[in-house]
Image: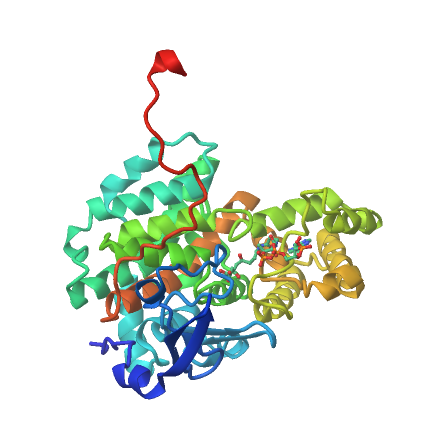
Length: 443
Ligand code: SDX
C-alpha cells in the first residue's frame, strides 16, 4: 500500500517565518514571511483584516498564493516546470503517463513493484457502471463533449458511494484511482456517442493510452490497427497536461473541495472551468484560429488584429499568466507534433506551416517581445490531436482526461492539509450604501 504523505510540514513554516512589515495609512502591521524551497517567498496576510480592518485586493490573483503545495513548481521567467521536482521534458521523454500519475499523487517515482501494483489498480477501475451508459442517451448527438463530461463526471458520486467520504484516507485514494481510471472511458464514450458509433469497452491488456485510443477509434466491424508511435504521442500529451500548479481549474477544484464536496463533484467543477477558451478551451480555439488564417499570406493581417486593442481577437495558444518565456510543454508538444505528422506521412500539413510561420513572425514582433508572449501548450496541441484523429471539440476533453490526476492530487493535498479551511474570499464593495425600501407607487 503506498504511503499517503502529509504535504504540510509544520516545522517548515515555524523555521521559515520571519517578520514582514506593512505600513498603511500610518499604521504598521507585522506579517510573517514564509520561505519556499524554490521560487518566491510569501507574506502571510491572513491576519491582515483582523489587525487593520482592511482587505487585500488582487482580483486575478496575480500576486496571491492560495495555498502551500509540494506538487508542481513553475518558473515562468525561465520556462521551467517540475512535477515533484522532476523536469517535465525528462518525464515526457523517459517515462509514461501512469508513472507521472503515481509521482504527482504520492510524491516519488515508483519502483517496479509500486508501478505494477498502481497500474493493476488503475486497470481494474477502467469500466463504468452499466447504468451510466444511459446518461449519454439523454444528450443530443451534437452536444459539446465537455457538456457530457461535466454531467457524467458529476454523476459518478451517485454510483460510487463507497469512495465519497473525504475524511477516510482509503476512500480518498480509491476515489483518486477511480477518477484517473474512468476519465478515458467516459471521454471515449462521449466521442463515440457524438459520432453514432457503439461504445468500445476498456481492454485490460492494453496500456493506458493505447486503451484510450482503442476505445475511441476501434469499431466492432474490423480489426483496429494500433500504432505504437501514436499511442506514445498520446501518452506524452497526457504527461504534458497532467498538472500545472494553481491554474484556474485546479483552483476551482480546491475551492469546491474546501467545502467538503465529494471528489467527483469537485472534478466536475474543474472540468467546467477548464472549458473556457482562455484556459483549456484554447487548444480548440487555436486550431480554429489557424484554420481561419488558412495560409501564411494572411498571417500579417491577424498579427495586426492581435495587437489592436479595439479588436477582441487574440492569438490563441499564445501568452500565459505565468510563463513569460517559452512554455516548456510547448517545446515537447511541437516535437511530438512533428513525430505524429511524420508517422502519418503528413509532414507537409499546411496548418503546421502556418503555425510555425506565425510563431516565427510573432516572436520577432516588438509587441509580443515586449509583452513576453510566447506559444503555450495549446499552440501545437490542436494540430497534433487533429492528426491523431480527434475532432476539435474533443481537444479540451483530452486536456481534462490528463489534468484529472493534477486536480485530484491537489484536492488530496488540500484535504490532508491541517491548515485547510473553507475558501471564502471577501470583496471591495462599491455598490449603493444602505437605503430604505420604496413602495412601488412611489418609484
Ligand atoms: C492554459 O494557468 C495555467 O497554468 C493554464 C494552463 C494550464 O496548464 O493549466 O497553462 C493552460 O490555459 C494556457 C493558456 C491558454 N490560453 C490561451 O492561449 C488564450 C490566449 N491567451 C490569452 O488569453 C492570455 O495570454 C492568457 C489568458 C493566457 C493570460 O492572460 P493574463 O495573464 O491575464 O494576461 P493579460 O490578458 O493581462 O495580457 C497581458 C497583455 C495584454 O495587453 P495589455 O492590456 O497589457 O496592453 O498581453 C496581451 C493582452 O492584451 N495579450 C495578448 C495575448 N495574450 C495576452 N495579445 C494578443 N494575443 C494573445 N494571445
